[in-house]
Image (cartoon, rainbow, N blue to C red; front, side, top):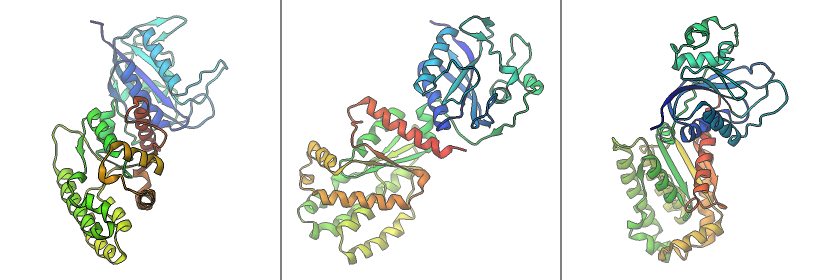
Length: 382
């Protein structure tokens, strides 16, 4: 069994979506380099040694079985994946992500590949401040002083601001922080599949719409005018009862919830299918109900073109859906976009998945997750 080593790393970003690059860097370190034990708070500080945008900086404790050289190789690989372009020019430059190995156990090493401990530790307040949060008593094996003493003696007087940004070692923790995620979309958009995949991969409580049990649905597709009102009232009652029960029952073994529908969809469909007088009555009842239901912290809308939706509907082969007209799907799409305009912008992500297949392609599935990470990171930008 390979030996385990305690290492401390510094991560910084001052280019692009800084929160995203820090968070993605942590996920990749956890995947490729070892186990993240501690993550410091995130600090914002002026660029050090050159004129550029402010940095976000953190320090982490990482347990690894890699050698110092192997760890450095992984660090450089992660920087490259996230767009870091190292230059042969002298001086400091902006970067999407910069990762420095500060300590590797108590190893003292100096060669053409790596210097340990990192020679800049004692000179940089943006390193010492977050490091003091997670390793205040770790001794510098050369200077023989702990982090707190090095911070007190540091001549760098750069002003650091502690932020409220939350970063996580795993996707599970990231989703747990969101607490409740809703995935919505038109008929055939793939919302149920995506909700199921996220639930399975990240241990979420899954809340699915039980549309197949509604006796009015097949009849509605045969005669919309006759069955629209009983269908929509039935859907609203079923959704309200199920949604309320599912979102209020605590599950000890699940860290968050993911749903493939939001109760508001009842009003979207009703506006399309009901006559004006029926819709007014429906909306009054719905408004009273909707006040009581739990709202998601992240609302994801999966957009697909009408042609792609029709193709998906045909593939899944539900007989009562095969007569759906393109115009009906386009009206539903418009209804969702009208609703999204009224929803808090920082909680609403529209994902165009028309040209990808996250059901069968792992790469496309990870692309969707990455867009979620990018969006939620932008919301956290200081």
